[in-house]
Length: 554
Image 1 (tube, rainbow, N blue to C red):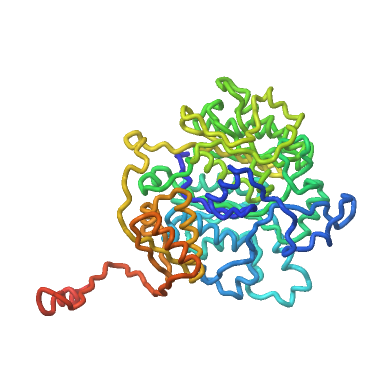
Image 2 (cartoon, rainbow, N blue to C red; image 1 turned 90 degrees about the vertical axis):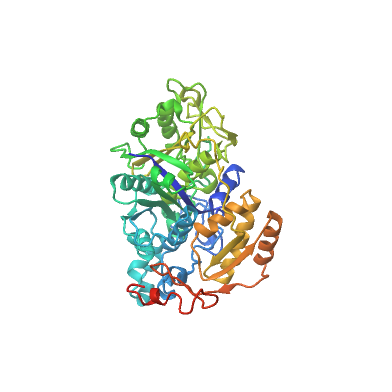
């Protein structure tokens, strides 16, 4: 497989994550996304009983829930009627919104209609289907109901709405769904099925019955938290969210001048086969897959810098997974220090179909920041894990990566409770030798005006607030203006901010975000060919360009 670049990221997870920047902020600063089940979903007291044996009740009252409303959606932005949107699975809504944000992050939003771009999305839970398929709601079924909760539509609606003609595939391998989707997307690009792809996964916890089922299966932790690699691990804590990444061949990303978060060196997937029970992992097959993917990538096991593990926090799964990782990457020839491992599930919960892509995003951001990402929660390391023997250590604090380590290489491991495993190796992007070290040597073109546009007045003001945050985080206003002009899609509600220095621009954006200043409403249409405009004022002679106007094809 030729190298593939991650050029765009979109994400919404618990803890207020709404962008790659807020994702990294939560991870690096070890903040927590787990909370009580919010009352706007359901009153947990109606379904809760601490006694695990009580039928029809769950012994969990916490989880990693989104701060935003999954049902909040602007259907007009995507050309969907309000009537159809009213019954849409919130997972479809989140995928549409987050895919657009990922495309925007990649600088191609609004410019991909008709392109050979594949959509590979992981999905697992069927909460929406359970909500709409009750007999009481049967009289309200309409022409949109059948497609409102179908797995098929999670990927296919994205392709339909944005007019994408590459493969559209929804993948369900349970907890490894989005990592398998990522693997298939890379294969699709390598095989020529699509020029680019968007890969990810989504999970929304919309009803208590799914919690009840998982509790009766004994899968969930009593405190609602995934305590990965801890002695207190007693099951996983559920989480919800969506993550999407934009993929394209590395040489194409270099050609187009894309920002490259990380390079995909190799991916792979296999199955556990027959184990002691269908939900029990197979350490030998996980180890075999990791070794195969590393060999496929042409990377020596001791060159892996860090492993982002699945790390559900189950008493069976954690020791088996780290046994596999230790044998594949830790206790190997050439490694002089223990290999750091961790799991983002301690912060975001186990987001099931969206968990693998959360791990990919964490790994890609760690690479781009050249920082080993910390694990949030640990009290006592699991005594059933032989850390010293496996030459592994839990990465409990953020740690800058030694400058002598080049390139940074991170492996991502994932497995589903039905036995489907997936593995990915990401590496730091290193520019070609003749440009290496130049960074942003090129100065941005001096546009002098920062354009802001959206499809509603409030969205324009919200975007202005987001630009303030980007500048505050260190983004150069000149680069921001160039990107806004050349890589963002331009919408009907718009305004612009002339600027000469950082302070004036930030002040103007903040005032505008709070409601000051007008917003222009324009209607524009793109012409297929160049248009020449002659105003009639100041031509060199009367009737200048009339011949051009009358010429065939003009």
